[in-house]
Length: 236
Image (cartoon, rainbow, N blue to C red; front, side, top):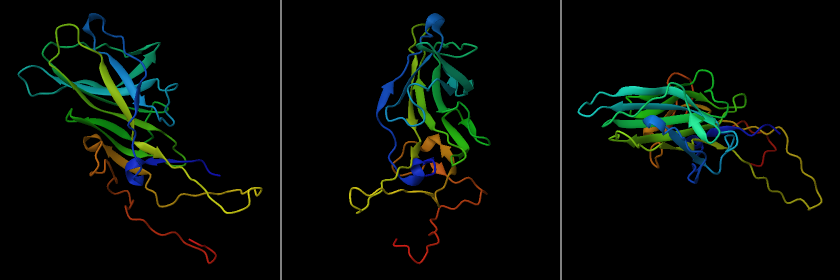
């Protein structure tokens, strides 16, 4: 049997994750540094509590009285160190500033080849050209925008990033009417006509009415289902 694949939850109309569990707290509060703590869905897939050890964070801030956003984090790797999350070139809170953060993680700490992430207008995080198929088995979790401010001179809290799965694993259940002592073998299972390539828009996630995954332009991928070729003995 072929390997079970991961596909977009939005495309497959499967439910997304809701239960969360605190993993680790970022103890980077000394000298008023910006720190993070993480939450991730308990029903995790490829990314689990044991191997979730890096994410990439994006963030910006506005100083009091200004509408200009200043980029603070731009895909900065944040890694687990003991019971803390740390990153290089420590950033510090600016008193009176208002902040926004978002982040993502994949199971091997890198987006698939050709995929990109951008913190659009410092308001939401998009991930474009993400592929997940038989040859690219990557889990993806995403943390929605977190807003905080105005920052205090001291004593600002670590920022909680709630990671949610935006892909779903396809699972199959087979039923038969053979006697209990019969052994049935299923081989060469294929999944067809499932879109495995798309752009993820954080501005639409989560939504019950708007698809946060869309087809990349000019990729020759259609949204319509095409019936597979069937053979004379097919019963379905």
